[in-house]
Image (cartoon, rainbow, N blue to C red; front, side, top):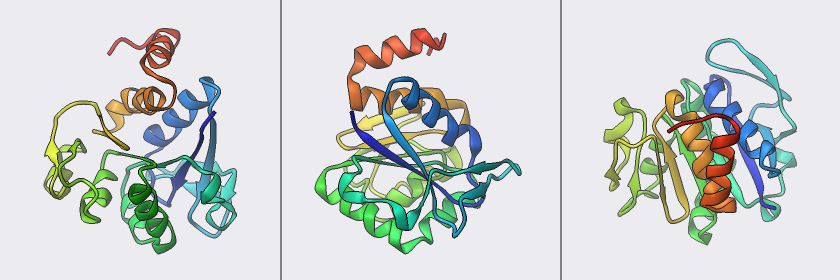
Length: 183
């Protein structure tokens, strides 16, 4: 079983974040919700407050296999402004570990040069910030160790893409059937 950490900043998009948590936990994956704020509760872009499992300083990145960045505004900007998280993101990409970002958050990967020569997608208004990427208009894209998703409406395909990366296509297809998703 892989260990996945999903990072929450004030202003995150709740559907994008919690759908991933739900899908991966249903599949038996260990997923930790992590606050990059100083507190355990983080408020979404629509005023939904969720209690996290950990704060950033409690995460052991050596024991983490996957980093997930949900979108939302100003959540995406807040994630990108968190230098400690960005250092870990860069280290994960360099080490070939899995990094997933959805909606506006793939722009972070573009800004940091991690999408050069990769297929990727994002919220349409953010596509110009996927620097060096072969931009696709698909709900979710897996290219090597990078997984990207388009937005809230693609939260399920994005979560299933992460599951596919971790457990294989058969597991993702079985989960899609179990949750009555017809992509």
